[in-house]
Image (cartoon, rainbow, N blue to C red; front, side):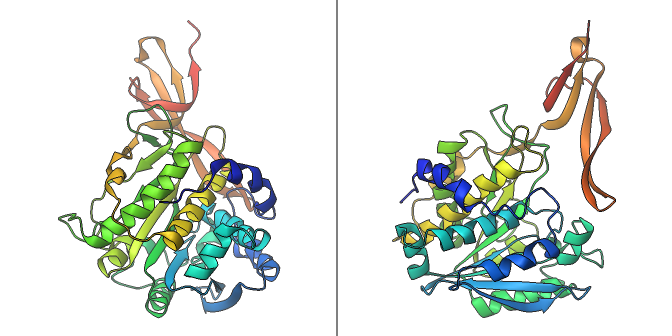
Length: 350
């Protein structure tokens, strides 16, 4: 299992970060100009249209036998993966002579849908223009975007999928006082959660990504429950035989714009793809179970009172105000919150 040198990544990241897209509100208008700046070896085409007739793009790179499909922003308000994808594309362009890039391009064929839900991205909503959650539409296939993703899946016939999401700030890493900055899941294929060969293979890739991240943000990586969701995209793709890695970008201290988290997300994606390009087998998967669980134990702000009897927790609501991203602090709950942690703690003056 070849793990990328963490110091190398930290050193080169400022060179490859795509500075034209920052913050949480990333729309099609923001990413379309970037397609003309891609490396000439990266093919870009409009593969379909959203419900509101916005362009949905597909990017292709590499000429290897190991086929990989990556998609981001199937939830329009989850943009960290999109930023990380363009960081990855810049890495491919700038460091094309590096052995990591050579291995990836020679051994993998990668298809990327950087923004599956441009309507939701524009409105900054989880759902598409018709109110459909694309991540719960894998069976009914009601949405235009869901049908398109299924068509791409069938055409590409990938060995691996990377399903990129954002998670809320409420999640922490079990056994620590840290937020879950990056979380992973190897989805189950049915209600029994049986450990199939496909799941073992997916877990192996996650083990490689976790080994890298633990060097950089130790104890900030969580693992989602493998409860089976019958209509979820990842669960169904795994069930169909496409090894699907779920990556959830979460919170890092003082990083509500998720600019630090995008970096860690990029590291995870790069390590995962590099591992696929170099792995001789995928049998080493047991360390997946050593990744701590994701738990809901955080609030954004807690006002602490004497004996915790009248603690007050607040949570930020993400919304658009006059076309700009805003965080609005709302009261969530009051009472003894001694078992909870906050990203910001305020002590009552006693």
